[in-house]
Image: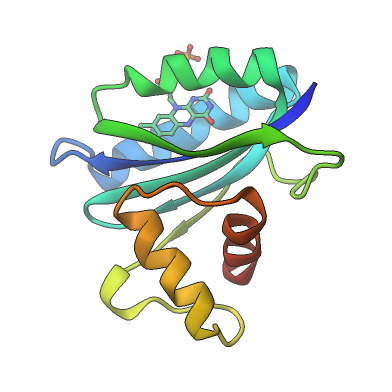
Length: 138
Ligand SMILES: Cc1cc2nc3c(=O)[nH]c(=O)nc-3n(C[C@H](O)[C@H](O)[C@H](O)COP(=O)(O)O)c2cc1C
């Protein structure tokens, strides 16, 4: 079943810029064959990843990612079935963010800002509000 999963985690100090590049190369190498797409936002201390694809592949990949030593304390923010892919052409779009001075592609409403702040705190969010927010970055 086509599903989406969003989690936040803490980027560890050992995760340098080079490691981010390495992660993105893994995404390129693996996600297409799993038919998984998504977006990865990262700051100096956080990751927010949105993944979409078949639920079994999705959970399998999340299990692998969760155990990755370049981050810790991964927390699922939302996981639910979806009817269509939201980022069908991105194996993994990535963007660096600075939580204190986030730059969005378009203006962001106070409601979206609230969702963003709660997301960074690891609080559960509805898929639609997280998606509405993530789309503002790309
Ligand atoms: C925040 C974060 C996000 C990641 N996202 C993905 C991903 O979407 N796809 C992927 O294959 N690996 C991802 N990885 C890397 C995996 O944990 C793992 O290192 C990688 O899949 C191993 O690839 P390999 O089996 O080709 O060696 C991510 C790692 C981190 C820390």
